[in-house]
Amino acid sequence: MATGQRDYYEVLGLAKGAAAAELKKAYRKLAMDFHPDRNASEDAAEKFKEINRAYEVLSDPEKRQMYDRFGHAGVDGSAGAGGGFEGFHNFEGFGDIFDAFFGGNQRGRRRRGPAKGADLRYNMRLTFEEAVFGVEKEIEYQRLERCEACGGKGAEPGSELATCPECNGAGEIRRAQQSIFGQFVNVATCGRCQGEGRIVPNPCTKCRGTGREKATRRISVKVPAGVDNGAQIRLTNEGEAGARGGEAGNLYVVLSVAEHPTFERVEDHILYELPINIAQAALGATVTIPTLDGEMQFDIPAGTQSGEDFVLRGKGVPHLRAAGRGDMVVRVTAVIPEELSDEQRALLQQLAETMGTPVLPKHSKGFFERLRDAVAG
Image (cartoon, rainbow, N blue to C red; front, side, top):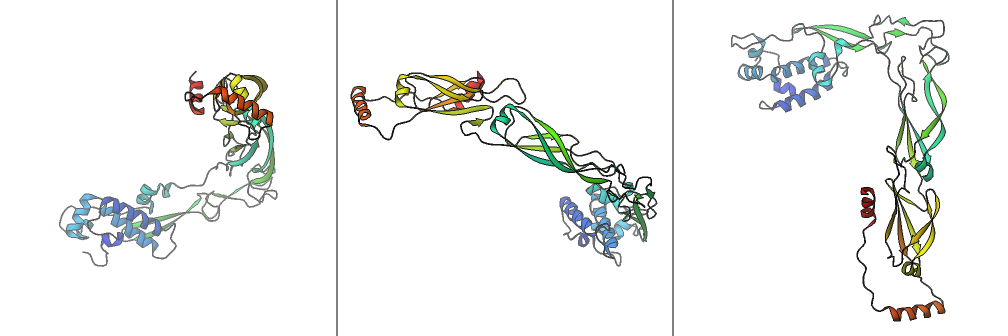
């Protein structure tokens, strides 16, 4: 093994028989820890170079086999063992291997272009009826808008942006380092212009050079019929203005629907519980019930059992993305009186003597079964 060079397995903190997945995992962690763009210590560059070298050898099956047999001499080309290869000669920048795993492009980095603005969220509360039938509401919110004074440039009107003297407009600073393996080039974002390649010698007094300013925005939002709690409405380009002339983000209006005191909503269907007395259940009756469209007459058939459901087609919530409406399910509940007058008690006692032993009614379908039947037609 060559003098002064650490064992490559030791460099990556692995045992000699480590699997390829272990190699990759160890390399990713160490490369992140010692990359010169992330680690400002004096020896970070040398350690990063050593990590890259170790992984380059051990990740190649053929080179790893030569290294395991002959050590550094087997892969540095300094011994006559055969199977040697050229090292990282003229390897420009630390990015080649690092970029393969982390998606960067150190050598291709240039000034930053327009950036899309941030998305915003607005919480809108609706009544039950507004969600069912739709509504148009005006909302007010704050956002960053392009500065009217400078047109988003950030420079005082009449002045121009200037090329950054630190990076000469490239948006990046490149520093070359010489080593035994050749020249390494470290690329970093220019600290003066923050990668834009241009500076603002005379900043706009209105937006202080940012190109954007806080403003209050008022717009009208159309809520379609049939929306439900938690639904979102996306308003394109109504978010914050983008930096450096970029397009605006979006505004997401998130809907919160209040509960109804009478109806319960299940998807596009409405459940209404109708209380009746035992005489109405036995003899039948015509009663007035509420619906989403107003009151209507409802016929209770004679012999109706408590808990029985009746489906009124097309009386539910309008479908959001299709024609038509859901259904309304009327669930009848026979209410047994807790207190009786003497006359009522006597009449019921006479009725009870004529009724005999009751027989359980045939099991009726539940609410969701009736819903499925209604939807199926």
